Structures are given as structure tokens and as C-alpha cells.
Image 1 (cartoon, rainbow, N blue to C red):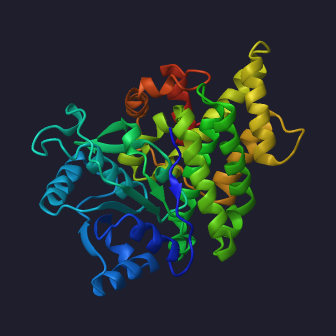
Image 2: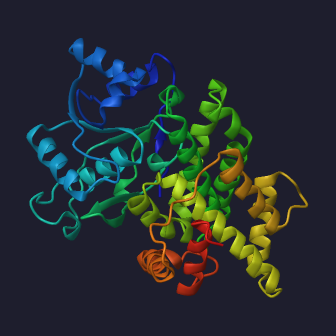
Image 3: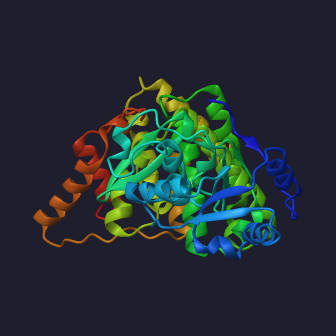
Length: 381
């Protein structure tokens, strides 16, 4: 997994101009929403296009939690308008769509893309994130949906060739989006740290990301401009961590809360990670033989709290305080009222969890445990 090349940020985008010029890039296939047009990077691209220096082919036919069909539409447009560069500007959704466009470019867009192998485009891929959250510019993963069912795609060719971290893109983000994306980055770092696939390198990325997030969270949410660059770096570091260690039960549990209850992804993930951390701290306390789990949670708690004496329970409490008190994130509303209906709703949530993702978790929760965790998340305990 070779790290992507970082294009240095400056307000004139001089480094980006040089990077494009050095590669002879004149035609850009841009995957971005309309909001990108109002950013400085959007104005930069328009000015160069107006000067006849670049041609921009824009694709924005996708929604949050994008369907794989959006990638098919993008592939058709790109084939009709060949370009020198694939550029994604935005959060996780445009990044994921762009990754699929690159991965399946030589596939037949009228057939199931994911069933076709060896179809990636030989096309440079540049990613410019506009949230400090997903870290998608640092990962080989893409998440798309087919008929609202999640498809997790992993391929080395999905890793962008280059990225640019522009803190100016974070200006004007709604407060809820800033909170949710901040928590997404934090959950990536936490889950990568306790993942069974964690390495010394991935834990180094996780630790740096967690410390930055905890130091900057209040300032960032409070519109302090100086917190933007550190938060964007933290999200990128967390992305590097999950690119190695992958996510765990927190992400496996959160997707149905997003698609079924209307929570932003990072919001949903944070509720699940908090519940899991509290449960694992109890498991560690009740099972003295779980030395590796205890040590992992203790180290993670020290990093999160900044206290060398922190216990696994202290870390869980600090995470809980951040989510429910500092950031005031709400719990999802249970849709049922009768006991049997509530049980059915919880069963449906537990059954939706991807068992493959649970394999990355240090203690695999069974169905009964998942039900109990969801009860807590819903505020029923």
C-alpha cells in the first residue's frame, strides 16, 4: 500500500498548478456536488477553464449513500468525454463514486459492475476532501449501495494517486455536519487502534489522530479557523490507520442506523463505538485473563484522556462525555412501542450487522450482545 502523494496547499494553488502542468493535464473529469463551485478550489478550476487552460467535465449525478448505479452513469459520461485526470472534491460520497468510476471504467456499465474484474482505468486520481471526517483520500475502500443494501469494495487501485488538504473547504460547514464528520474520524482512529489487524504503524496514525481531535474538537465546532488544518490532518491520519487495520464492529453496527434512522454516518458510528467501548471495558474487568484486551483499552484510554492513569472504563466515560455532553449528539428514536415490536426492531438491527466486519473486532459480540448494545444505543437501558 503505497501512500498517496500530498500536494502542498497554498491559497493560490501554485503547487496544484505545477502538479497538473508537470503531468500535462488539460482535461479533468470532476466528481463533485454543486457546493464545490462556491469553494476557492471551485473558483480556481473555473478561472483556469475560462482562460482556456483546462476543460472540466463535471459529474454530480449521485446522492448521499450513493448507489452503484451512479458509478455506471459516471463511467458512461467519462467514456463519452475522455479526460487526463479523475478529480473528486467533497466528502465520502463523491470520493466513493469516483473510486468506483476508476475501478470499473473498462466494465460494461449496463451490467453489474462489481461482478467484472480487472477493469480499472489507467487514469491519475486526485482527491480533495471537503470534510474532516471520512479520510477517504487515504484509503482503498469505497462504500456504495445497491437497492439500499451496502456494498463494501476494497481494491488497491481505488487509493487516490494524490491528495490535497485544503482547510478552507471546511469553512461554512453546518455544525451538525462538523460534529458528525469529526466523530467519523475519531471512530476510524479508535477502531483501527483496537482492530485485530492493528500494526505499530497503524496505531501510530491512530494515536496522532486521536490526540489532534481531542485537542481541537471544541475549537473546531466553535468556528475557530485555526482548528481546521489540524482537524483535516487528523481525519487523513485516521484514514491511513483504517487503510491498514480496517474498521470493526462500530462500523458494522452503524450502517442501519444511518439508512434506517436518518443519522449521519459519523453520528451513528460514535453511538456504536461508545456502546462497544463500555461493553469491552466490562468484559476486560470481568475477565482478568483478557490481558491483551485490557492493555489495548488502557493504552487507548490514556491517549484519549491524556491521563497516564486512565483505565479502560475511564476511556469509555470520556468518549461518552464527548458524544453525549460536549457535542450533544442525540440517540435514534425507537419506532415501536409494544415490547414484541421493540424486540423485533432490535433483532432487525442486529441481523443487519455484517459478520465479516465483526472478525476485525477484538471481542466478537454475539446476537444477544448486539441486541443489548442496541438497546443501550436507543436509550432503552
